[in-house]
Length: 371
Image (cartoon, rainbow, N blue to C red; front, side):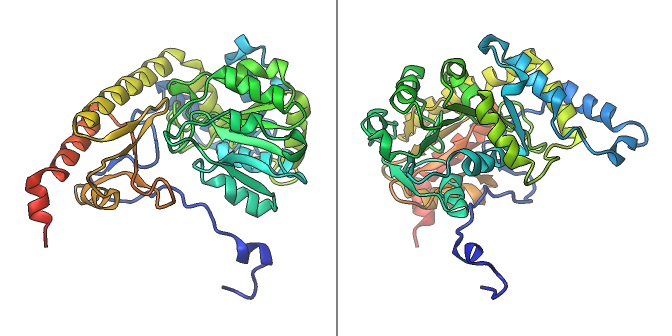
Protein backbone atom coordinates (compact mmCIF):
# COMPACT_ATOMS: atom_id res chain seq x y z
CA UNK A 1 0.00 0.00 0.00
CA UNK A 2 1.59 3.24 -1.17
CA UNK A 3 1.82 6.42 0.89
CA UNK A 4 1.02 8.29 -2.33
CA UNK A 5 -2.47 6.81 -2.52
CA UNK A 6 -5.47 8.85 -1.47
CA UNK A 7 -7.72 7.45 1.24
CA UNK A 8 -10.37 6.39 -1.26
CA UNK A 9 -7.83 4.26 -3.15
CA UNK A 10 -6.62 2.58 0.02
CA UNK A 11 -10.17 1.59 0.95
CA UNK A 12 -11.25 0.32 -2.47
CA UNK A 13 -11.82 -3.36 -3.27
CA UNK A 14 -11.86 -3.21 -7.10
CA UNK A 15 -14.18 -5.24 -9.30
CA UNK A 16 -12.56 -8.40 -10.68
CA UNK A 17 -13.36 -8.79 -14.38
CA UNK A 18 -13.62 -12.16 -16.06
CA UNK A 19 -10.31 -13.71 -16.95
CA UNK A 20 -8.94 -13.14 -20.47
CA UNK A 21 -6.22 -15.80 -20.75
CA UNK A 22 -4.01 -16.19 -23.80
CA UNK A 23 -4.25 -19.98 -23.98
CA UNK A 24 -4.27 -21.71 -27.37
CA UNK A 25 -7.33 -23.74 -28.45
CA UNK A 26 -9.37 -22.20 -25.66
CA UNK A 27 -13.10 -22.70 -25.17
CA UNK A 28 -13.88 -19.47 -23.37
CA UNK A 29 -17.19 -19.64 -21.49
CA UNK A 30 -16.45 -17.30 -18.57
CA UNK A 31 -17.35 -13.75 -19.65
CA UNK A 32 -20.65 -14.10 -21.54
CA UNK A 33 -19.19 -12.96 -24.83
CA UNK A 34 -21.19 -13.73 -27.95
CA UNK A 35 -19.86 -16.87 -29.67
CA UNK A 36 -20.65 -15.43 -33.09
CA UNK A 37 -18.88 -12.57 -34.92
CA UNK A 38 -20.56 -9.18 -35.29
CA UNK A 39 -22.80 -8.43 -38.25
CA UNK A 40 -20.81 -8.32 -41.52
CA UNK A 41 -21.57 -4.64 -42.00
CA UNK A 42 -19.77 -3.71 -38.79
CA UNK A 43 -16.28 -4.40 -40.09
CA UNK A 44 -17.10 -2.72 -43.41
CA UNK A 45 -18.34 0.38 -41.59
CA UNK A 46 -15.19 0.55 -39.49
CA UNK A 47 -12.98 0.30 -42.58
CA UNK A 48 -15.04 2.98 -44.31
CA UNK A 49 -14.72 5.31 -41.34
CA UNK A 50 -11.01 4.65 -41.09
CA UNK A 51 -10.42 5.47 -44.75
CA UNK A 52 -7.57 4.28 -46.93
CA UNK A 53 -4.97 6.38 -45.11
CA UNK A 54 -6.57 6.40 -41.68
CA UNK A 55 -6.91 10.15 -42.00
CA UNK A 56 -10.05 10.32 -39.86
CA UNK A 57 -8.09 9.28 -36.78
CA UNK A 58 -6.47 12.70 -36.49
CA UNK A 59 -9.90 14.19 -35.84
CA UNK A 60 -11.78 13.97 -32.55
CA UNK A 61 -15.02 11.98 -32.70
CA UNK A 62 -18.44 13.58 -32.25
CA UNK A 63 -18.54 14.18 -28.47
CA UNK A 64 -22.33 13.84 -28.45
CA UNK A 65 -22.42 10.72 -30.64
CA UNK A 66 -25.37 12.30 -32.43
CA UNK A 67 -25.62 9.80 -35.30
CA UNK A 68 -25.46 6.82 -32.93
CA UNK A 69 -28.01 8.36 -30.56
CA UNK A 70 -30.33 8.88 -33.52
CA UNK A 71 -29.81 5.28 -34.66
CA UNK A 72 -30.59 3.93 -31.17
CA UNK A 73 -33.71 6.10 -30.92
CA UNK A 74 -34.88 4.95 -34.36
CA UNK A 75 -34.23 1.31 -33.50
CA UNK A 76 -36.43 1.65 -30.40
CA UNK A 77 -39.05 3.83 -32.07
CA UNK A 78 -41.84 1.46 -30.96
CA UNK A 79 -41.21 2.86 -27.47
CA UNK A 80 -41.33 6.48 -28.76
CA UNK A 81 -37.65 6.99 -27.84
CA UNK A 82 -36.12 10.28 -28.99
CA UNK A 83 -32.48 11.18 -29.46
CA UNK A 84 -32.70 13.43 -26.38
CA UNK A 85 -33.54 10.37 -24.28
CA UNK A 86 -30.32 8.51 -25.16
CA UNK A 87 -27.03 8.63 -23.26
CA UNK A 88 -23.83 6.98 -24.52
CA UNK A 89 -20.80 5.57 -22.73
CA UNK A 90 -17.67 3.52 -23.18
CA UNK A 91 -19.41 0.24 -22.44
CA UNK A 92 -22.32 -0.07 -20.02
CA UNK A 93 -19.83 -0.12 -17.13
CA UNK A 94 -18.94 3.52 -17.81
CA UNK A 95 -22.62 4.36 -18.26
CA UNK A 96 -23.34 2.78 -14.86
CA UNK A 97 -20.43 4.62 -13.27
CA UNK A 98 -21.96 7.94 -14.34
CA UNK A 99 -25.41 6.75 -13.23
CA UNK A 100 -24.17 6.04 -9.71
CA UNK A 101 -22.52 9.46 -9.52
CA UNK A 102 -25.29 11.51 -11.13
CA UNK A 103 -28.49 9.79 -10.01
CA UNK A 104 -27.94 7.34 -7.15
CA UNK A 105 -25.86 9.26 -4.58
CA UNK A 106 -28.36 10.40 -1.94
CA UNK A 107 -28.71 10.52 1.84
CA UNK A 108 -30.77 7.32 1.88
CA UNK A 109 -29.41 3.87 0.95
CA UNK A 110 -29.43 2.46 -2.56
CA UNK A 111 -31.08 -0.97 -2.82
CA UNK A 112 -29.87 -3.89 -4.95
CA UNK A 113 -29.88 -7.71 -4.64
CA UNK A 114 -27.37 -9.56 -2.50
CA UNK A 115 -26.43 -11.69 -5.51
CA UNK A 116 -26.00 -9.43 -8.51
CA UNK A 117 -23.48 -7.62 -10.71
CA UNK A 118 -20.28 -7.19 -8.72
CA UNK A 119 -19.63 -3.64 -9.90
CA UNK A 120 -22.55 -2.20 -7.90
CA UNK A 121 -20.89 -2.31 -4.46
CA UNK A 122 -17.62 -1.16 -6.03
CA UNK A 123 -19.26 1.98 -7.42
CA UNK A 124 -20.94 2.58 -4.07
CA UNK A 125 -17.56 2.49 -2.35
CA UNK A 126 -15.96 4.68 -5.01
CA UNK A 127 -18.66 7.36 -4.74
CA UNK A 128 -19.33 6.95 -1.01
CA UNK A 129 -22.92 5.78 -1.54
CA UNK A 130 -24.76 4.04 1.28
CA UNK A 131 -26.37 0.80 0.12
CA UNK A 132 -28.35 -2.20 1.31
CA UNK A 133 -28.32 -5.66 -0.21
CA UNK A 134 -31.78 -7.19 -0.52
CA UNK A 135 -31.60 -11.02 -0.37
CA UNK A 136 -32.86 -13.01 -3.33
CA UNK A 137 -35.22 -15.89 -2.68
CA UNK A 138 -33.83 -19.40 -2.24
CA UNK A 139 -34.42 -20.09 -5.94
CA UNK A 140 -32.50 -16.87 -6.79
CA UNK A 141 -35.61 -15.03 -7.95
CA UNK A 142 -35.98 -11.36 -7.07
CA UNK A 143 -38.96 -10.87 -4.75
CA UNK A 144 -40.44 -7.57 -5.79
CA UNK A 145 -42.43 -7.37 -2.56
CA UNK A 146 -39.14 -6.93 -0.67
CA UNK A 147 -38.77 -3.60 -2.49
CA UNK A 148 -42.44 -2.62 -2.49
CA UNK A 149 -42.66 -2.94 1.29
CA UNK A 150 -39.81 -0.50 1.90
CA UNK A 151 -40.71 2.95 3.17
CA UNK A 152 -40.00 5.27 0.18
CA UNK A 153 -38.70 7.90 2.57
CA UNK A 154 -35.91 5.50 3.52
CA UNK A 155 -34.89 4.49 -0.01
CA UNK A 156 -32.34 6.41 -2.08
CA UNK A 157 -32.84 4.45 -5.29
CA UNK A 158 -33.01 0.94 -6.73
CA UNK A 159 -30.84 -0.86 -9.28
CA UNK A 160 -30.72 -4.44 -10.52
CA UNK A 161 -30.01 -6.30 -13.75
CA UNK A 162 -32.91 -7.85 -15.62
CA UNK A 163 -32.12 -10.66 -16.31
CA UNK A 164 -30.06 -10.73 -13.16
CA UNK A 165 -26.38 -11.61 -13.22
CA UNK A 166 -24.95 -14.08 -12.45
CA UNK A 167 -28.20 -16.02 -11.93
CA UNK A 168 -29.92 -15.36 -15.27
CA UNK A 169 -33.40 -15.05 -13.77
CA UNK A 170 -35.70 -12.37 -15.19
CA UNK A 171 -38.41 -10.25 -13.61
CA UNK A 172 -41.73 -9.63 -15.39
CA UNK A 173 -42.58 -6.16 -16.65
CA UNK A 174 -45.59 -5.87 -14.33
CA UNK A 175 -43.30 -6.27 -11.31
CA UNK A 176 -41.06 -3.45 -12.54
CA UNK A 177 -44.10 -1.27 -13.14
CA UNK A 178 -45.24 -1.90 -9.56
CA UNK A 179 -41.79 -0.95 -8.27
CA UNK A 180 -41.82 2.32 -10.21
CA UNK A 181 -45.24 3.21 -8.81
CA UNK A 182 -44.18 2.36 -5.25
CA UNK A 183 -41.12 4.65 -5.44
CA UNK A 184 -42.14 7.44 -7.84
CA UNK A 185 -39.62 9.95 -6.47
CA UNK A 186 -36.65 7.58 -6.49
CA UNK A 187 -34.57 6.65 -9.54
CA UNK A 188 -35.00 3.03 -10.56
CA UNK A 189 -32.28 1.67 -12.86
CA UNK A 190 -32.89 -1.52 -14.82
CA UNK A 191 -29.60 -2.89 -16.14
CA UNK A 192 -30.54 -4.79 -19.31
CA UNK A 193 -27.18 -6.14 -20.44
CA UNK A 194 -28.78 -9.52 -21.24
CA UNK A 195 -32.35 -8.51 -22.09
CA UNK A 196 -32.16 -9.59 -25.74
CA UNK A 197 -31.92 -13.26 -24.78
CA UNK A 198 -35.45 -13.67 -23.46
CA UNK A 199 -36.58 -10.98 -21.01
CA UNK A 200 -39.08 -8.14 -21.43
CA UNK A 201 -37.46 -4.73 -21.81
CA UNK A 202 -38.48 -1.99 -19.41
CA UNK A 203 -38.09 0.50 -22.27
CA UNK A 204 -41.85 0.09 -22.67
CA UNK A 205 -42.24 1.94 -19.35
CA UNK A 206 -39.91 4.90 -19.92
CA UNK A 207 -42.55 7.16 -21.45
CA UNK A 208 -44.87 6.88 -18.44
CA UNK A 209 -42.28 6.91 -15.62
CA UNK A 210 -39.90 9.84 -15.26
CA UNK A 211 -37.90 7.98 -12.58
CA UNK A 212 -36.94 5.03 -14.81
CA UNK A 213 -33.54 4.65 -16.47
CA UNK A 214 -32.78 1.61 -18.63
CA UNK A 215 -29.19 0.69 -19.52
CA UNK A 216 -28.11 -1.65 -22.30
CA UNK A 217 -24.92 -2.73 -24.06
CA UNK A 218 -23.67 -3.79 -27.47
CA UNK A 219 -21.25 -6.27 -25.86
CA UNK A 220 -23.54 -9.30 -25.60
CA UNK A 221 -26.25 -9.64 -28.24
CA UNK A 222 -24.40 -7.44 -30.77
CA UNK A 223 -21.02 -9.24 -30.44
CA UNK A 224 -19.20 -5.95 -29.83
CA UNK A 225 -17.58 -6.46 -26.43
CA UNK A 226 -14.29 -5.32 -27.96
CA UNK A 227 -15.68 -1.99 -29.19
CA UNK A 228 -17.10 -0.90 -25.79
CA UNK A 229 -20.51 0.61 -26.47
CA UNK A 230 -23.13 1.15 -23.78
CA UNK A 231 -26.15 3.38 -23.56
CA UNK A 232 -28.98 4.47 -21.29
CA UNK A 233 -32.51 5.54 -22.14
CA UNK A 234 -34.67 7.67 -19.89
CA UNK A 235 -36.56 10.90 -19.86
CA UNK A 236 -34.51 14.05 -20.63
CA UNK A 237 -34.25 15.13 -16.98
CA UNK A 238 -32.22 12.01 -16.15
CA UNK A 239 -30.17 12.16 -19.36
CA UNK A 240 -29.19 15.78 -18.73
CA UNK A 241 -27.82 14.79 -15.33
CA UNK A 242 -25.74 12.04 -16.91
CA UNK A 243 -24.42 14.37 -19.62
CA UNK A 244 -23.29 16.86 -16.98
CA UNK A 245 -21.23 14.18 -15.25
CA UNK A 246 -19.89 12.74 -18.52
CA UNK A 247 -18.72 16.15 -19.71
CA UNK A 248 -16.99 16.68 -16.36
CA UNK A 249 -15.10 13.43 -16.87
CA UNK A 250 -14.50 12.66 -20.58
CA UNK A 251 -16.14 14.51 -23.43
CA UNK A 252 -15.11 11.88 -26.01
CA UNK A 253 -15.97 8.44 -24.59
CA UNK A 254 -16.71 6.75 -27.94
CA UNK A 255 -14.19 6.91 -30.77
CA UNK A 256 -15.02 7.24 -34.46
CA UNK A 257 -14.63 3.55 -35.27
CA UNK A 258 -16.78 2.49 -32.33
CA UNK A 259 -19.62 4.81 -33.31
CA UNK A 260 -19.52 3.65 -36.93
CA UNK A 261 -19.49 -0.03 -35.94
CA UNK A 262 -22.37 0.35 -33.50
CA UNK A 263 -24.55 2.09 -36.08
CA UNK A 264 -23.87 -0.72 -38.56
CA UNK A 265 -24.74 -3.35 -35.95
CA UNK A 266 -28.15 -1.78 -35.42
CA UNK A 267 -28.80 -1.69 -39.16
CA UNK A 268 -28.59 -5.48 -39.64
CA UNK A 269 -31.61 -6.61 -37.67
CA UNK A 270 -31.90 -9.93 -39.51
CA UNK A 271 -28.41 -11.00 -38.41
CA UNK A 272 -29.13 -9.93 -34.85
CA UNK A 273 -32.38 -11.92 -34.71
CA UNK A 274 -30.75 -15.00 -36.21
CA UNK A 275 -27.74 -15.13 -33.89
CA UNK A 276 -29.68 -14.41 -30.71
CA UNK A 277 -32.19 -17.12 -31.66
CA UNK A 278 -29.29 -19.54 -32.17
CA UNK A 279 -27.91 -18.67 -28.73
CA UNK A 280 -31.27 -19.13 -27.03
CA UNK A 281 -31.74 -22.49 -28.75
CA UNK A 282 -28.26 -23.59 -27.66
CA UNK A 283 -29.00 -22.43 -24.11
CA UNK A 284 -32.12 -24.58 -23.86
CA UNK A 285 -30.36 -27.62 -25.30
CA UNK A 286 -27.39 -27.12 -22.98
CA UNK A 287 -29.73 -26.81 -19.98
CA UNK A 288 -31.46 -30.04 -20.99
CA UNK A 289 -28.19 -31.94 -21.29
CA UNK A 290 -26.87 -30.63 -17.97
CA UNK A 291 -30.12 -31.61 -16.29
CA UNK A 292 -29.64 -35.16 -17.57
CA UNK A 293 -26.18 -35.16 -15.96
CA UNK A 294 -27.74 -34.27 -12.60
CA UNK A 295 -26.90 -30.56 -12.54
CA UNK A 296 -29.31 -28.07 -11.00
CA UNK A 297 -29.85 -25.39 -13.64
CA UNK A 298 -31.33 -22.03 -12.67
CA UNK A 299 -33.93 -20.86 -15.23
CA UNK A 300 -32.15 -18.36 -17.49
CA UNK A 301 -33.25 -15.57 -19.81
CA UNK A 302 -29.62 -14.62 -20.51
CA UNK A 303 -26.80 -16.00 -22.65
CA UNK A 304 -25.44 -18.05 -19.76
CA UNK A 305 -26.50 -20.72 -17.30
CA UNK A 306 -26.02 -20.75 -13.53
CA UNK A 307 -25.45 -24.35 -12.46
CA UNK A 308 -24.44 -26.59 -9.59
CA UNK A 309 -24.08 -30.30 -9.06
CA UNK A 310 -25.17 -31.47 -5.60
CA UNK A 311 -22.54 -34.17 -5.54
CA UNK A 312 -19.47 -32.30 -6.79
CA UNK A 313 -17.41 -29.34 -5.65
CA UNK A 314 -17.59 -26.36 -8.03
CA UNK A 315 -13.93 -25.50 -7.53
CA UNK A 316 -12.86 -28.97 -8.59
CA UNK A 317 -15.19 -28.95 -11.59
CA UNK A 318 -13.81 -25.60 -12.75
CA UNK A 319 -10.26 -26.88 -12.29
CA UNK A 320 -11.02 -30.01 -14.33
CA UNK A 321 -12.50 -27.91 -17.14
CA UNK A 322 -9.47 -25.64 -17.18
CA UNK A 323 -7.20 -28.63 -17.62
CA UNK A 324 -9.13 -29.29 -20.81
CA UNK A 325 -8.81 -25.63 -21.89
CA UNK A 326 -12.43 -24.83 -21.05
CA UNK A 327 -12.87 -21.89 -18.66
CA UNK A 328 -16.06 -20.93 -16.83
CA UNK A 329 -16.78 -18.43 -14.04
CA UNK A 330 -16.72 -19.47 -10.39
CA UNK A 331 -17.84 -16.88 -7.84
CA UNK A 332 -16.34 -17.50 -4.41
CA UNK A 333 -18.93 -15.65 -2.35
CA UNK A 334 -21.67 -16.56 0.12
CA UNK A 335 -24.70 -18.50 -1.18
CA UNK A 336 -23.20 -19.21 -4.61
CA UNK A 337 -19.75 -20.67 -4.00
CA UNK A 338 -21.03 -24.07 -5.14
CA UNK A 339 -22.24 -22.69 -8.48
CA UNK A 340 -20.62 -22.13 -11.86
CA UNK A 341 -21.72 -19.59 -14.44
CA UNK A 342 -21.36 -20.98 -17.94
CA UNK A 343 -21.61 -18.79 -21.03
CA UNK A 344 -23.51 -20.26 -23.96
CA UNK A 345 -21.06 -20.97 -26.76
CA UNK A 346 -21.46 -22.42 -30.21
CA UNK A 347 -23.12 -25.85 -30.45
CA UNK A 348 -19.65 -27.37 -30.78
CA UNK A 349 -18.36 -25.55 -27.69
CA UNK A 350 -21.44 -26.56 -25.68
CA UNK A 351 -20.96 -30.18 -26.74
CA UNK A 352 -17.33 -30.07 -25.60
CA UNK A 353 -18.41 -28.63 -22.24
CA UNK A 354 -21.03 -31.34 -21.70
CA UNK A 355 -18.54 -34.04 -22.62
CA UNK A 356 -15.95 -32.64 -20.21
CA UNK A 357 -18.47 -32.37 -17.35
CA UNK A 358 -19.79 -35.85 -18.04
CA UNK A 359 -16.29 -37.20 -17.64
CA UNK A 360 -15.62 -35.04 -14.56
CA UNK A 361 -18.53 -36.59 -12.66
CA UNK A 362 -17.94 -40.12 -13.91
CA UNK A 363 -16.70 -42.89 -11.59
CA UNK A 364 -13.69 -43.32 -13.86
CA UNK A 365 -12.51 -39.76 -13.32
CA UNK A 366 -13.17 -39.87 -9.59
CA UNK A 367 -11.02 -42.97 -9.37
CA UNK A 368 -8.24 -41.39 -11.44
CA UNK A 369 -8.37 -38.18 -9.39
CA UNK A 370 -8.21 -39.99 -6.05
CA UNK A 371 -4.92 -39.49 -4.16
